[in-house]
Length: 429
Image 1 (cartoon, helix red, strand yellow):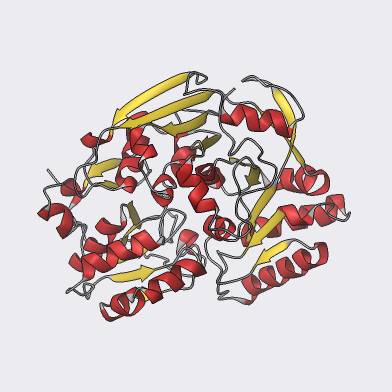
Image 2 (cartoon, rainbow, N blue to C red; image 1 turned 180 degrees about the vertical axis):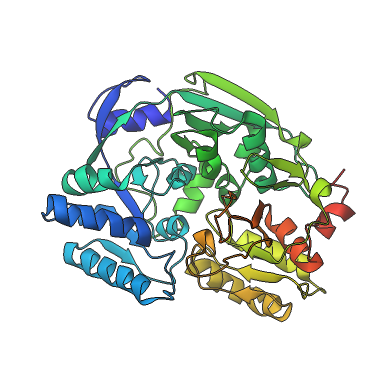
């Protein structure tokens, strides 16, 4: 069995499972943000109305209404706080960071776990070797919270092997966006996607993070990177360290990919810096093809951005430069830990003096709940995960997705632009 199958088998009390089977499995962690938590709580109290037997398994993170601008939104957070405290659910209040980053940094996700959440990007926790899947709020209220279980259809596995060496200036974000376009949006419906190959093996933890993040755009049910020494080193830095009960080490599949139903191989050396253009993530074009398009907003943040690596890249691009007077550059740390690290490295002051605006650790302008709403005809380039019309304000505004270096270069130019580092190193053809 591969990793996904082994995790499902263990959690359902079986010796083995096969693709297509339906299993009822124990859920190790439920992740909710302030919007989904409010909906789940409403159903739970009205339809279930009993104590939560395993409150330690549930985590509620405030990352959308991180600074409620209206009384109505403040009431949502108040209700969430009261509900979480009444049942003893783990609560990470405003300012702790983006849902997925805050959950990981808090030590709530570990290899081998089954993790569920209503957010469609929940599969990103496969980066740690967890089996992470998105479920609806009613499933959380009806089975996960009262019984600690959920049913799953065992997915077929598609193994994506990445080979080769990236061109100078090409980042993991560019490669992840390229894969969505190359494979096709929705083409891997209900699959478990394993990312592997020499490129993944040689990547850092936070570079790997960008691949399971986008599996939902491929139509996949879940995605993962099999745990290795990179995973182990990262998990050791988290609260609680490595999970107990792993006598055989980190969970792994039985073989080197032969359990996969399909194997897809790609050469990352073909990829140049890209921009995902409206209206979907798979609508990618080389930066050079869309360079010159004016942007009124640039942002580092969202599930795919706000990492310390993104902030360092932005500081490198802005060194000796300032944000264009016609563009607002928002920087949203993914977690409190990232903001503290940026401060220790002097990046907070450097980017502030270059004209960027810092926001609390959160999900940023995602869905324009607290910030970043665009007017008709405006455009934003960001490290976010989605770019469909109306995502951040007007349905007649435009959202472009790119790497942190491209976002920062565009903030300086006031229009979509290649980073000077990429140009100087010959990474852009």
